[in-house]
Picture 1 (tube, rainbow, N blue to C red):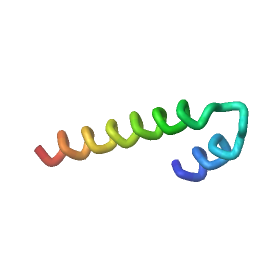
Picture 2: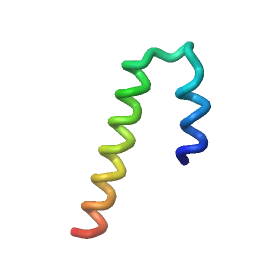
Picture 3: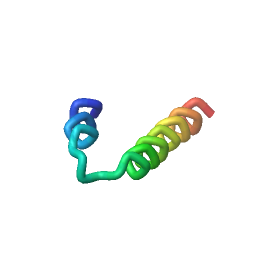
Picture 4: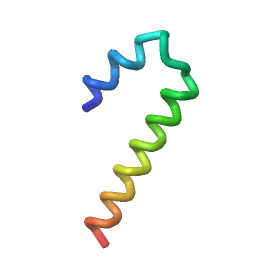
Length: 39
């Protein structure tokens, strides 16, 4: 998954804020899924 994200991060046509918010959303989804599985 990280290998698929890296090329996107290196492309300058996306704004850094947009990339950061996308990463934040993905991280939150992963944490939520882990919590739901453990709960």
